[in-house]
Image (cartoon, rainbow, N blue to C red; front, side, top):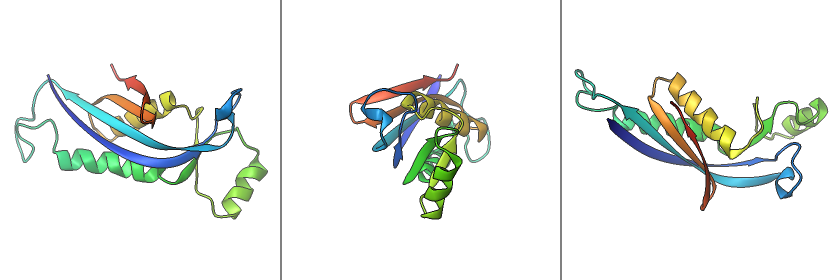
Length: 140
């Protein structure tokens, strides 16, 4: 079994709906996502012969997703009224509407699924919301 790992960071704001604590209020994180790939065999031919995948391709795809999420307000669909969304957009705020509660656990799964959809053999994502706390998602 072979594996690769890379990471990228992004800054974004979010809040947790139906949560009764500090995180129900709008706040931000310096998210750090660590992405792991796994392959039983190395590629047999072509420019990526004897590799899981070229690190350049791996890093490019992970960093592109981080860039997409960087400096945006992560919003669970349905958690804010349509008029609030319209007002924020009218003021020029960058919003990313997501079909899930914006917990670290769900963001780890989201990153895994997005990268797997691009063909990367992702087996695990660690999503740090603080330097000492992370959620992990394992694809099996």
